[in-house]
Image 1: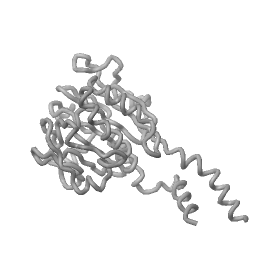
Image 2: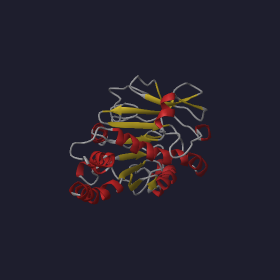
Image 3: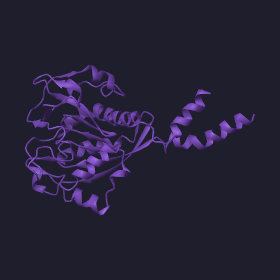
Image 4: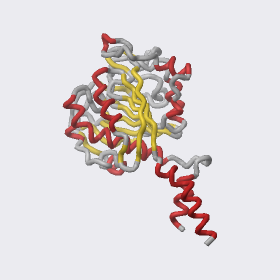
Length: 273
């Protein structure tokens, strides 16, 4: 009886934490054409048994380059403490978020983003342009570990897709939705990836990744080179975007349990008794 009472008491303490599976997501917009994507992702407050809370930041102030008057300097806002990346488990780069058409929007945020990923964050990326450089003349930008993995972005358009064995196992294209990648419109892709990249899908026109995950420290970079610049392209991508949130959570939950956060482990032990 005493043992049962202890278990019931533990359940009362643990149940709110177990049921609360909420993840905070920072959505980054660098192109006004991707506002539809951002709005749709924000509508996904619940996917399967996970819930999500969203904040949005506009990072491109050049209205002549599809920027927004609501934009802030991302790096300065992080430095001032107005944006605290540690508040988020997922950062979501909408289509063209880090840069496009010779505009680069991550200046000053590079080190903070890399450290955030290294410490366990998951950064999701749609496609973005090949035609910009950071302040050091690098394509992509230092928010991505290009010094360790010197990849490139290649100027391409739509193509057929072959999902790899790793992609089939990942669940990205099957949970919770069955995704038809051939229906999704592709855009510029990463090229010449090294062996650290886990390729989840390949383009059939050039054999380069249509989707990959790159483990980095305790976290992950995930990229699918989709295009959501208009309503039609967004509509066919919606099943993938929902799966993307679910997949990001699966990566977070695959990380080793933090010794300061043992509730899920304890819950599993109680259920097994």
